[in-house]
Image (cartoon, rainbow, N blue to C red; front, side, top):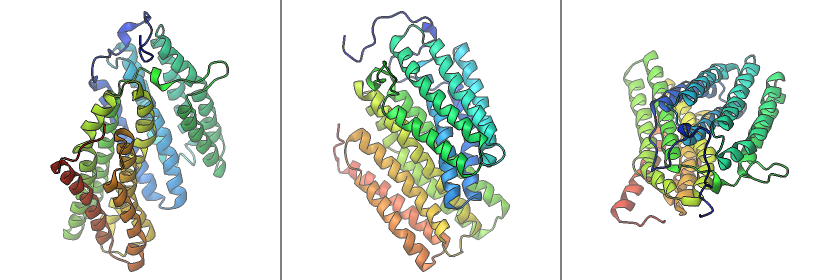
Length: 400
């Protein structure tokens, strides 16, 4: 028996466990759960649009992190459990309802609905983990993993509730501490006294399924970005705004192309075949890097809204940060994702991020129209796509 193989055991409820036979398909129950997060991304985008300042950006980041924790930990759960089995499906529907409530509370999360947001978050996070302990009983490594994580999740949940009870800067600080503790706890394996750490090589992860699920979330975020631009267009339709709409749509297509044209399927294969490294790779790729990619889409969506509202206005600092910063954040997250999986430097993406950042003071200083700024962002993103295509045609080998 190799170290990565689970010991011979008899799970108490084997029918609830997913089989480990290739990449497991995404079920309709999982897709139904995902639908709620279209609303979540819409709420986050509108929050950033309505609070176009550094504090609004910080609030959006904190809310995205908490929403992401709900989604990604539920996705890890369905990586181990059968979503279409009755008990699991019931819990997923409950988490879906909780996620919908969280999303509804986002606009006033740092005002009147903060406590509601916090209480729902705690019920979802702690309740799901307790259910997981019941469902995987008899599978020692899975039980051990959830036992390790439960005290940490409960501890951060208490902080989230405390944040909901206070106001202003205190809420920001407490929720930021909860997010930081969650991130660090997972990174170091949720250590507990006398129990040590949870080792990622024992997490029995089906990496291909996680890769496909996260790719689906990126697709949801991109779809929401198109919805924002479409709804903005309907408020005032003329040739100028329709041209701005086409530019915004092209930008969304370019981001989709960067992620999905070649990398998504290849990434699924790499993670699915990573062996003992699958758990560690999945932790970094999906818990840490994908929210950066999603954040890039949210910021880009805010930039698209600004583009459709004032395509001919001079580019302000806020507009430039949205229009250029969104694709830069997306490409930076995707560059880190590719570097992690292929252990090679994604030069085209890193160069594009540098160029986009360098264009910020240029567009603001020269006061170029917002539409021109958006066109420059599109050109830089398309350059990444073209570079990737030339690499494939040149037969550049992909690192193992």
